[in-house]
Length: 439
Ligand SMILES: [Zn+2]
Image (cartoon, rainbow, N blue to C red; front, side):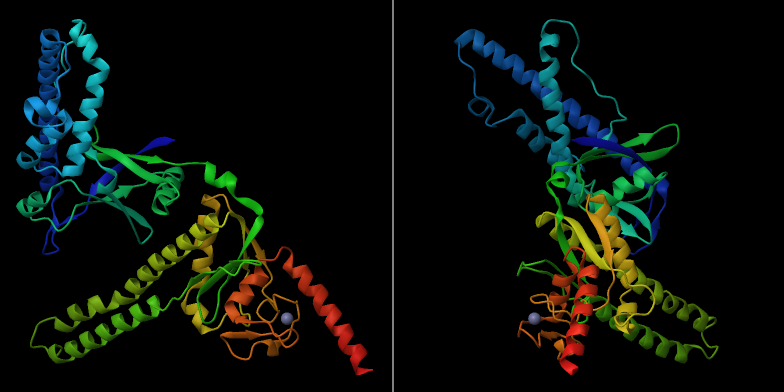
């Protein structure tokens, strides 16, 4: 199923040197591309019309349908139109191909009426919408705001206009339903397909008619009784598995830490430099030079946001692949044995929130369980003991000798239905057994 959402855009264009390009300049280029799109459409119609007349005459005279390749040396009108127009126009070639294909498809629906004299061959006007191939559209999510980058020019076009890469726009998201659609496109739950960029005369603004397709089949195929246990681990940030399944989902992490270190190293070197220019010789040197350093916290937060989006998206993909209709996670509130500095730095809550919202989008239920003893319990025999963990990374059961990665073992426990109740019962049983042994 394909649907369209309409979104107004605000130009956010930068040149190669990183300077903002005035929106009026951007408009001029886009209007020029509209004219080129018109030229492409009219040229394609002309070729189609010529070919049809030629071939019908040919059939009348010889009784045989001509092959385009034998007559013109090209295999289709669509291919020939692209070939003739590609070198001439500045349009991105995938978009151009979408435009000419559209004209060819339309032509077949009205050509009979033209032959019968019921209508004339269409002539396209100059305010044509710009066709966008699906690969020409890239959604960007930064600081709680959606942007879109559109590939509208061919490579030579970039050089001509001095652009860095593509046309960047801020998306004006007016309501929650639009926001949800964009989130689902961004998360790969919906798929962006060929779309159109139009100029809204009334509002003097560009408008993206974004087409997206989705398939509800996946959601109904998920089994609500099949649970994916998700553990926020110590040696790995995220480990997930289905109970009884050796296969596991694992995020090694370390990316955020690495990014933080590189950014902070740069910050230190910048502060070093400001020491030498802060003695008044270079005007307001110090104030100016420390400014970018202050944005570093922002940068790390943004990187973490993007990374958590990536991780949660990958996790949901795994859940769908496994057919899990339910995700179980530990509800970590306040200070527990697990929420040490490492986890706080990881903004576990942020990751958990993102997992939950993406799970909802995909039709997966999220169940929170109490986190107690899930890391000390043996997922094979149920024996609970803190010495089952000889070290942070390893699990070895004192009772049955089951050995595994500690995070994997925890995720196995977390993936068991009603694990809270089971653990309570087991604890009771173990306590009474211990008392019997003492006597
Ligand atoms: Zn065991």
